[in-house]
Image (tube, rainbow, N blue to C red; front, side, top):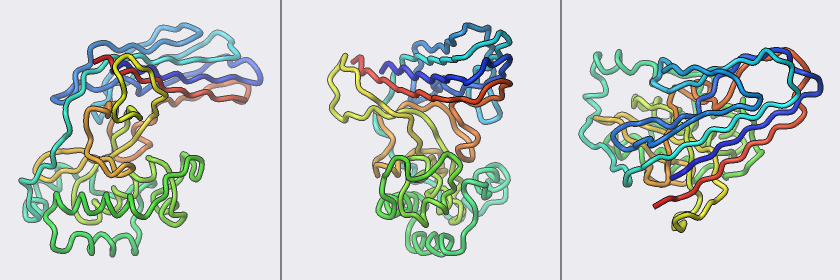
Length: 276
């Protein structure tokens, strides 16, 4: 698939300097091959890349010439693989091992987006009862899918899992965060994954569709595997994996600081084309 992610800003007064990080480059791993990927800016600038603590490739760039607009375009061609099957080899005894808890403690602890909540912890215990770890992951994801209504604009970028649960609505970020609260409450290491989703299940080759930035979860149940609680489906060939972390704050597609006028407009588009 080809993915073109465009982000545009306009400013009320010239920006004289800005420092930015873009997490827009798909990952290459056993289920995904990155054929080509680039991040371009207008105004043009020199960028450098590095890999962050979580293994995500970051494009860093800064601008020092006055400008009133900024456009960032990330283009990639990625080969994805088939649907990911649940990993069922891990037991609850395995998850209680000190060595495993120490290794994955960062994916077990609460965060600002995935805080502890007494009612949700009780629900986690209920969903865990009688299930294996892998079945508990599916049970939690399906419960979240049943509880939340997908409604764009119902929550903000700073909303927590508890905020979305109390409102009973949200977007993919909220579905992922709420699922993480439940899984971590069960003692299952779980992480937040950002990327893209081709919105047409049977999209024709060479047809360009309006895609979307997307989020899902990965859980460790003997190995890492992904599930999409927003759509209640396994991660598969329509998903393009970009970044991972504890929650949204670790994977924000574009963030930075600048000196100048306030941003008056923000344009974000994602176009996805199935090439084969």
